[in-house]
Image 1: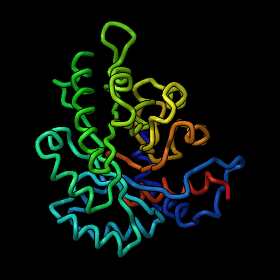
Image 2: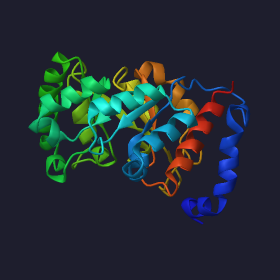
Image 3: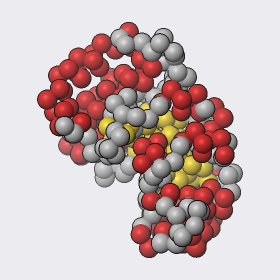
Length: 281
């Protein structure tokens, strides 16, 4: 049975697990899980469109202290900042398309300043931009140029991976290799999506060891052996091992995410409580 189908019949049980809170199922060996946990709001995007404030309240009640935006749902950044401040939420990062950064960097930087984003993250590359290693080299040049301009505004540019960056082009070099080597670490940071890295055949810890300090941001989601995306703690990714190497990787913020959860709020609650329990304290 696919795990998502299983969850449809076991939602009540998962809700009960989440309700047990941080006293339940303590890890035998504590993991160095960050004290402040965040959620990528793409996970709850459809709910935000219906009840923006109510969903953010649910995120905060779960225990999350940070959010990462993926669009502002037509709302003014100043109004959003007022809502966040009233709830005790901060938004250290946001996903912004490469096209939007190219077309109107000043407007994106202004919104980031208002909302308190320290990072603007490029979340995706169109197929035409990633068709060859030369294409990735051109992307790296663009990222360096945009990163230099954002740095003047006190904002760090970052890049978020999927699995396609780990494909090779007739040899052993990948697009991700090019991005890491051809971007200036001072101008372009990396937001490593653990699911997509593992799905692309890469070991996150090996990336950390090869490129220390390059990964201030992580996306936390899990992967079943058959490739299905699941909540943190339901799959094969060893999060304790990942967190044991997080300091060397330069990790500063982590965001739970699920691209297509059957129940978005239950999904982020399950992942949150698994991470808290993983601390073992």
